[in-house]
Amino acid sequence: MAAKELTICGGFSALTRPELYSYVISIEVMYVLSVFSIDIQQNDIASGDVAPSYSVLQATYFGQEQRTYTNLNSYAGLYMLEMDSHGNDTSVKIFVSTKPGVHFPHPLLPSNPRVGILKVRRNRVLITWMISPTESQHNQVVEYCVSANPRKSYKTQCEVDSDINGDIPPTPPPWAGFGFWWEKLARKKLLMKVRGIKKSVTVLEDIIYECVGRKTWHMFRDLQEGTTYFFDVFSVNPVNNASIAYLGASTTTKVSKSGRIRDHSLTTLKLEESDDFSSVSSYTLRQKTPVLYFFIRSCMGPGPVEFEVSLNRNVLLNTRVMSTETLSINDAPNGTYTFTVSSLVRQTREVQLFVSRRYWKFPFPDLPKDKRILVFDSLTTCDSVMLAWRASSDDKVRYCIYQSNDTRNLMPLFSCEPKYEHGYNREEVMCRRYNRYSRHRIQDLIMQKVRGLKPGNSYVFEVHVTKARGDTLPYEQVLATTRKHCTSYRRNR
Image (tube, rainbow, N blue to C red; front, side, top):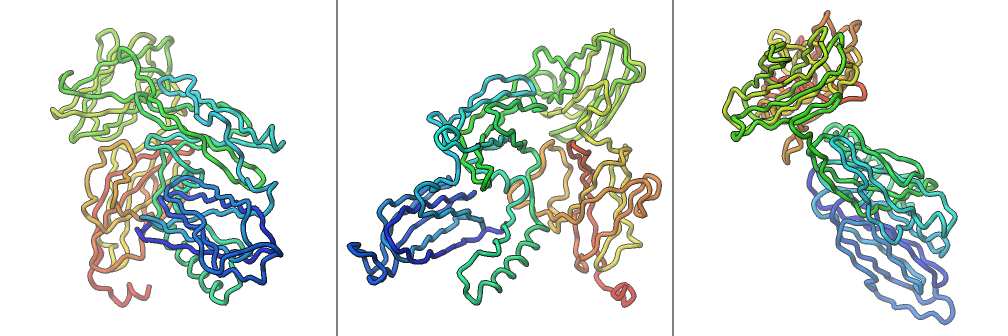
């Protein structure tokens, strides 16, 4: 979202007697919270109570975590929460109660709220945590959700949801507000703003998030070896979906010893100067298989890499890989295979390698040999362009088209991680499937028109293909420029 200072103010109606107040604030960016009691009328106070007739600061807080404010002897009157978001637009969840028995909407944390690491393997990590005391003290069911990512620990559950689904403002419930005449118009303006945000939202695709019920342990699988992951646990009240975060933990997955490659495991190989910019690893096939599949991907550095597969010093496969390739060896005999990956440019590189005897185990879609995106100049108008690309051999994949008017983004995609650099402005145009019977497809060629462009502007287009329940790979980027002038025929069409 666009950087903007956001101020939220809300009031609570007068109360008739001293009661307990509990404010639970759940927010995903740095913010300032202040609690005031203001304009309290003497005739609204119960007998014996003395209240000030001016604004009084009750509490203030600066931070990013979920907070609770409690006052066991509060005066009747009007209370105000004032919140300032530092840096970004955000949304806030607030719980207010005057009933001592329900003043904690979220579960309680145990005496040791830290997430424990029980077991670390190359692509698996087992974590555990202590049970919430809410179950034993209040006889209330508590469920747990877990997350893992390679960047940071999360302070709140809504922060995880924001990174997975995009930081989209929630729609206020029908009963929200105080009955002012302008609230209906403000709600309409918010809905219009949400539609615009949804078109440009950027989500993070490398977060693992799962709700595990009442278990107090979880095994994360299919992780990348030699990678640092951050693990978080959230205790959730299933009645109102309120949650609280445990203290997260982090660990680094192990790396295969002696360059050994295992089945169904994505391995990152480093080509460094100390090893003459090459890597040698081994793979053991215990029985003959009809087809042995390889996926190789160049992650960092320009130019192609050379990939060689040998068995008993006999070279079975030798090819050059520019970006990504899916390769295979038919009637592969059993034995110990040797994989040699070397850089044709003397520069430090990273390459990902995946080996499997079963094609359905591949996490990545099968891209065609030709990964170019074509632009038909004859079909380009002042407000649209026609894109075309070769289809994947898998009909169940989903294609997403992205556009950017920043031509500086036109560069080779060497990174194996999605692009989330600050200032990278990319807008999602559409996401859909193109099966073999689609009217946008002629045999293995997909054609899609992108509309709503501006005359005489240059755009960078990307096409990403995602395998069902799998990962995403990009095609090559392409630059297209719309025509400066619109003909009457094309304008009215």
